[in-house]
Amino acid sequence: MKNVGNHNSISRVLFFSLVFVLNFSFTSIAQTAAPVAAIPATAPPTSAGDPVKGKELFNANCAACHKLDAKMTGPALRGVAQRHDMAWIYKWIYNSSAMVKAGDPAAVKISTEYNGSVMTAFPQLSKGDIDNIIAYTSEPKAEPVAAVIGTTAPPGGEANTSGISNNVVLGALALVMLMLIVMLFLVNKVLTKVAKVNGIEVAPKEPTTPIWQAFARNQFLVLVTSIFLILTSAYFVYGYLMQVGVDQNYQPIQPIHYSHRIHAGSNGINCKYCHSAARVSKNGGIPSLNICMNCHKNINEVSDTTATPDHSKAFYDGEIQKLYVAVGWDQTTQKYTGKTQPVKWVRIHNLPDFVYFNHSQHVTVAGIECQTCHGPVQTYEIQKQFAPLTMGWCINCHRKTEVKMEGNEYYTKIHDELSKKYGVDKLTAAQMGGLECGKCHY
Picture 1 (cartoon, rainbow, N blue to C red):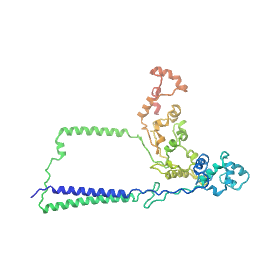
Picture 2: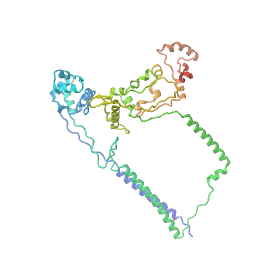
Picture 3: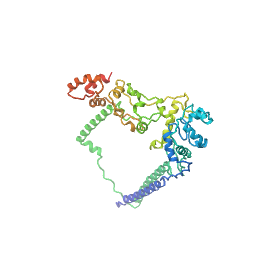
Picture 4: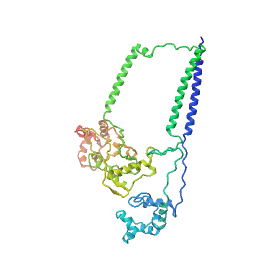
């Protein structure tokens, strides 16, 4: 009987051939699924005036009370030139109150519809400025770009511009992989039959000692491995137990998405505007939805630049609508309906019951910035627990944080005595008694 190695050689040749075919298939599918460029829409012509300058004037003078396509404090302004003649518009912008008092029917109707709200007069605007604003409001509403053939728009996300859906691509890849496995099995079976017919004998593998038997016969390796496993297990058990109750980086999804990145970061809203209780009480407090409505009575959508790869503009606008439902705000009538719904916020920072922490003592007295404990919240899209909030973390902060003595008569009286005791000019919270058990534990 012959002993020939052609069997393995033929298998390798067939394997690499199949790999080449598979690679070619993947490349073809990827090229087919390449996104198709969207067809740009052409801007329609505008009316008299400069709409570009008009947009700047609109944002500077009108945007606080008006939107183009939705009611706000005042009516929607798109197409206002089709509802009123220019002479009337000039008079209204220069002195709307006088027109209401004079009994102008259109002026009285607008005043009545918006509960007698008085529009600010703009005598500083020239007629050219007003013409530019009207040109901007006369531009037709931009229509979304038409979807190309084969595209789909998933809810809450951007349109998928690929010609083939992801499911089709994945299905094709799975089918090719299955074909490869079946072909390798059949090739091996055929080669085995050919070898038997031609009297070719494949050399059997030489028997070897199983690795576990070789390991068991070496007593030194068994001892060292046992000690290593015991120490490793103890280390991981200790580490696990030390993390019980530590929720650092806990980042729950809230019922209404609130982006600190947009509010505290992009818009620069001070933390204590919403969390006003942190200045005067033990708890930081959950802001009332009325605080949200101070701004969102007039802000019912976000700008296009606010969108991120994870959250589209439509997503943020939808979250504002959730706020309106919770407080019972009717955007059309600009009034509260009285029908409210509770918002079940998920608490993020939660200290044990036996721990005492006072926000006002740290925020107002000590003057500590919110970011010291809560991290760079102005960059967070979803709020999380930044610090571990463990006893060791608090103690380290007390050991290194110097107490601000200026303007505090209580600290002034004992500062000299403690300074002499410790031989320092600046005192830390620990040196002022910040490590006493009773300071933080009942």
